[in-house]
Amino acid sequence: MPGSRTGRPPVQRTVRRPAVSRAPRENPVRRLHMRLRRAWDRPLTAYYLIFGGSLLITVLGLVMVYSASQITALQMSLPGSYFFRKQLLAAVIGGGLLYAASRMPVKLHRALAYPILAGAVFLMALVQVPGIGMAVNGNQNWISLGGSFQIQPSEFGKLALVLWGADLMARKQDKKLLTQWKHMLVPLVPVAFLLLGLIMLGGDMGTAIILTAILFGLLWLAGAPTRLFVGVLSLAAVIGVVLIQTSPNRLDRFACVGSTDVTRCWQAVHGIYALASGGLFGSGLGASVEKWGQLPEAHTDFIFAVTGEELGLAGTLSVLALFAALGYAGIRVAGRTEDPFVRYAAGGVTTWITVQAVINIGAVLGLLPIAGVPLPLFSYGGSALLPTMFAIGLLIAFARDEPAARAALAMRQPRFGRKRTGGREGSRRWNTMRRRATAARTSGER
Image 1 (tube, rainbow, N blue to C red):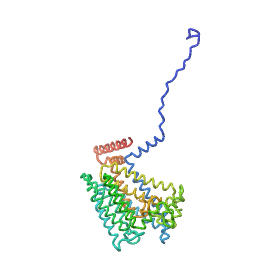
Image 2 (cartoon, rainbow, N blue to C red):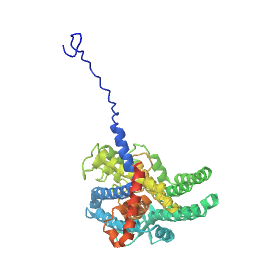
Image 3 (cartoon, helix red, strand yellow):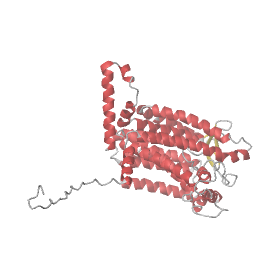
Image 4 (cartoon, one colour):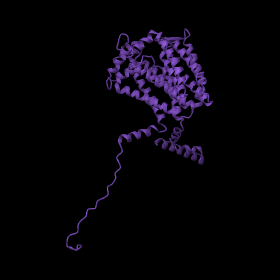
């Protein structure tokens, strides 16, 4: 045969192809984790979390106030939407305060610290004047404005301590005085104890606890030594024990933690009943049974229990997730700034809102004694809503003031804006902002 000298057919050899090395498939869980991490590290994440989280909490709170307060209003011979209308008015005014605070420069915030502190101290002292102050549920901490409107000055004391304390600690840090324990404690601790004393004259233990938490938050951010921190904490604990032991009402509240005695712990037990009857998705909006007179303060201190009954576990977990996101964003703002005032103020506001939410929700769940504090941005009460929304405006202003956030926001301005700045100079500014935003985004993704 042709091609073979021996006459045999040629042997066909199989050619082996080299093995193609395939890259290992990326784990979808890891891929999702990396995407979430890049999203969390973007410059505007804190800004969106604070603004969006606070807005959702406030709107959901308005819905639940309307649902939880109808029966109470009718029992008081008032229109069913009475409390909702008052809360809506406070939310509108608070929205104006939030917008104003979010647009104020840091210098103006610092300038307002002393006037707000002086006004809060004056109003808190005015509460104790006979004929001006009024008692609600046994606590002398309200001032009547005529008609059905009252204010609680101690709520503004929280904002005053945050702003004034942040400005004080920032000034001392600039002068490098915080290394001395005297400068760290004076005059911060005496002024805080003055506010606490005015609050305790009215018997409001819950607000005093939150004010104490703000004080410890400021000391912790200032880098207080462990011995100093423990000393102040021990002094506050001793004072708290004395105040609890001398009040039968406070002793009963501590005794009701985890108790099932309906006779002695009516409010705590019915709060658990409301949460237990909600199930996974609740009985439906407006279908709560406990708000028909069984659960006291259903639209204020125990609105979280009504939320669990009507919206179920899904609704309560959503509220918890919103507060967790708000707390994370506040910690991020405080941790990334180089301005000491912004760090102290953001940390103080985050401590205030987080601790108050934990105390309220812990009392509803039966894990903590009932302290009589509202759920921030959620419960009924204009006196608590107004300073809280102003504090949220502070966080928004601080989140917008980060260098990477400013560059990212500048990128979203319309392109014709650079024409108004004038020729090459405007184009140069636009290109600079664009490079900064790109660099900030790249560093965030890394």
